[in-house]
Image 1 (spheres, rainbow, N blue to C red):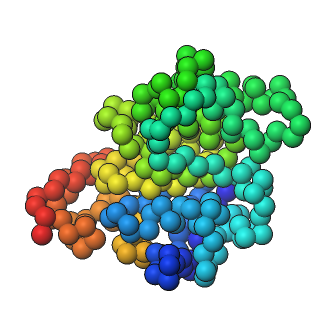
Image 2: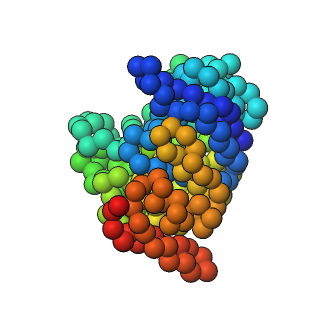
Length: 255
């Protein structure tokens, strides 16, 4: 799948939240959206997933406007992993993952649905959690369950909103390594909103920096995450340390 966003505007109570946003994601790409709080990252994800309706502009999936696609059609192409909610969610893990098959279930569960759930749980490495309750899990386990649920939809586009929130560094790397591996092995286009610039730099093929609802810069991490851009967008002075594979951003002081 190719996702294309063209000339997107969105307003909250008459105030622009997104302004003239263009964005593209191709299959097997991991694309990150970074920017300060309230810059429009989550709003953009919701417009892509047809949870919000832009007042100007179009979102295309394989050149078809999502405005012309029904809910079931979108659900068979796009799955999303929202920010982790630590509120009570008293369902067993197997049942949570099974919810991802909703776009395919007609009258009753089929053998294929159960097979896909089992395969997804094994792929993510949570088959040992089958009978546990979701709200008894750690943050890292919860995130893996939600990713397994998303995979059961057989998506062509996977959308994630702050997938590393509440996770320690080990689980941050586990989750993002998993997402990147799934993107490459299954030709899934991945769009992530993320705060951590170092994680975005390490795991993204391309990055979009968004500031006050506009795309400020886009390109590969080494070209986009420069001291000049970060100072302009975040009001923070940084050093960018470079190796052959990665860059690492070190704050100096706020302006």
